[in-house]
Structures are given as C-alpha cells and as structure tokens.
Image (cartoon, rainbow, N blue to C red):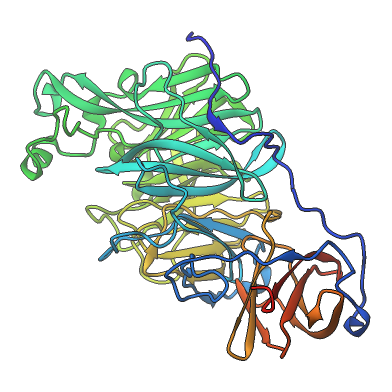
Length: 520
C-alpha cells in the first residue's frame, strides 16, 4: 500500500463546510408598511459586477441558462428541489463557453450561475456539477480539467453551501500517473472518495487485430480516505476484463484514425463511466463500461468480478429486450433492481435511449427487464447522460447530448421535462434539501424606471422588500415583490438611496443591500 498523503492540493484558509450567513431572528407578518431597514441584518453596499453579457442588469458578468419547462401528466407529484448542471454549447460553440456551472429549481428557474473565470489556466472546461456530502455537510462538487477523445484529466473541486471553494482534489497514487477523469467522483457516507482514471497502458492487442506492443486506455477506479489521503482500493479493467470484450472494432477504428492503439491515441476498449457502492453494501462496487456494453459487480476485498451483466461475456441471459449498449450510470435502485441508462447509440441500436431496470435471477442466471422509462419524445443520446434513483423512488434523467432533463414518478410517469438547448449537460441530479447561502450581498441596480435585484445562489428568498429615501436613516417602505427567478424587477423610486431586503417564507430578513446615487 502506498503511503498516505493529503488529497487536498489547496484549501481555503479556515474553510468550514457551514452556512456562513445567519438569517434574522426577527419575524414579520404581512404588514410591510410598518417595516424598516433596521429590521434584520445590517444593510450592505450592493456589489458591482463588470461584464459583457446583457441577460441580467445586476450581473453583466453572467450569461443566462435558457430553459423551457413542460409539465408532465404527473406534475403535481413531482419531487421538488434543485438540479445542477455543467452546461456547454457543443454545436457551433463560441470561442469561450459562457457558463461554467448552474443550478435550477424544479420549475426551471435559474438559482445559481457561475462563469468560467475561476478555471485554472491549464483547464478548459467543467463537468458533472453534483450535490454531495462532505464531513456531514452538504457541498457542491464539480470537475475542472482538459478533455480529449472522450476522457479527461483534471481535478475535483469542492465548494460549501456559500459557494466558496474549500478544496481541490487530484490524487495520483497507485498504478495511475494521470489526473482524475470527469465521468465519476463520489464522496461516500464513509468519508471516502471514489474516482475514475483513464490510464494509458501498453498491452498486447493482437487478439483484436492490433500490434503486440499496442496501447489501450485502462479503466481504473480508486477509493481514498478523504481525511488521511490513504489509497484504500484500486481496480484495473485490464486485470479483469480482456480487450476482446470491447465492442469497438479495432480495424474499423484504425481506418478512422491511424493513431488508434498508439501512445498518442490509446485504444479505448473499456471506457469506464460510473462507479457506485452497491446500495448499502460497501463491500461491493457497481461499475459501468460503455465500450463493452456491460456493467460489473466488483468484490471490494479481492477485486474479482462477482458477475458481468451485458456485453460479450454476460453471466446472465439478457432476454430479447434486455440487451443494452453504449450505456452510462449503473446503480442499485431503492427497490433492489439494477438501474442503467441505456444510450443505445453510436451506432444506433434503438430509436430511443431509455432507462432500464433489471431483476437478477441468480438461480437461473437470467436478467429480467422489469421496468423501462422512455423519453417523452424521440430522443437518443449519442453520449453522456444518466439516471439518478432517488430515495423517494423518483428518477431524475439527464439526456446528455440531447439538451433535456426529465423527472419520473416511482410509477414511471413524467413530472417535468425541461429543454435547455442550445446547452448540453453530462448528467442531471436532484437535491431536495440544498440550502444556498451566498456570502456576498444581494446585487442591486437601477435601469430606467426599474430597480433590479438578484442574489446569486440564495435558495431561501421568497420576496424582496424595497425602501428608499435620502439616506439609510431616512427611508420609507415602497414596495414588496415576490421572488421572480434569478433577477426580480421592481419600480424605481425617485430617491438617491435605494435598499432592498431579502425575505424568506416567514418574512424574516435574510440580507439587505443598498445603492446610493449621491455617493457613487
């Protein structure tokens, strides 16, 4: 076993994964007329942001994330919460991608936006924004790095509930000498990190028509103790799955690019794209390999395969409708079935991608297809995509290369279907209890006859209360408006000093900010 070392390359000084902005203990009824700026936290000057975008008056540094919500037949039964994304424009991409990460609610309102100014100069993209738990606290995680030919090398970023970065993780222990890939990184309830690697490795490719000294991308996953940095477990596809399991046709790939199978472009025979504990069984992992059309159960003690589902060497009879291919994201659902996102594409195997659940019969070694979730309309994801099984039984589906996410009830009915073109997104998740508490004050700006206000990432704002006057000591209540998405518009009073309070559902003041034309 390799000696342990800290996983964190950088750590924000004094960072604790806690909500840093306390809400006011004061409570108000509907009588806004008798309220004042003295109620609640001190009024802070509004931050000023510079930028070239025109989507928001208060935040010209941020580009909007366009969404179109279609209510499904089971809309009233939707699981409410927040949905993260790391969107990018793939078709006719701009010189610089406008958005790094975004969070929307289940009504498709934008809640938090992050541009790409935070990127390491060596990195060109973000992937896989996700809600997770770290040291018992809710956090946001995402991947930053550089991508190439379907894999990437980069680092995992952790931010707290105020959206402040607290850590960057890029462990390279054991058999790997490359940085983590973007497809999967999971912080477990055991305070361990599961992460994937695409490790260039020289190996004999004669069995698939290649050279004896060829190169492949080995699919590796590792588990680390987050606190100590100790490498607890590692697994290599080459040690357990032969290159002949690949559904990639090596001669065909050589015709496409003569560099395939060389150190310059290793043959991606396996393409690992997800790893999970097998539900509550922390002694077993479930992994998915896109290019073998198979998912695998891996014993944590020995590294040996317990079983293979799908592909050339399946241990189970898949039945007529059970065969899947180019899949992403295997996990154990709450009902005990094996849930898989079946891309069925590139080349196309079916008209639609789908989510499928199997019940495994270990006596007769048959995989029974017990559920299939189809898209609301014709939709086939050439790559990327996922299906998240929630504790409630709802399923959150991100369609990857197809610019949509869809939520289904436990009975398979559509609650919401959201179009976010022209942006695509690798995966879609949902959190019922994310509470964003940004450190910065709400942003306030006047344009024409309107006041605009936003508070990037705040999830508890229900209303905005507007005051104005000669100065802070001489203000009057003017208006209250319901939160109306990322940026809310109110009527501009004819005063130099303008202030707003952010109110929660109980009327408590969360924060307050002001602008003063007389001093600016």
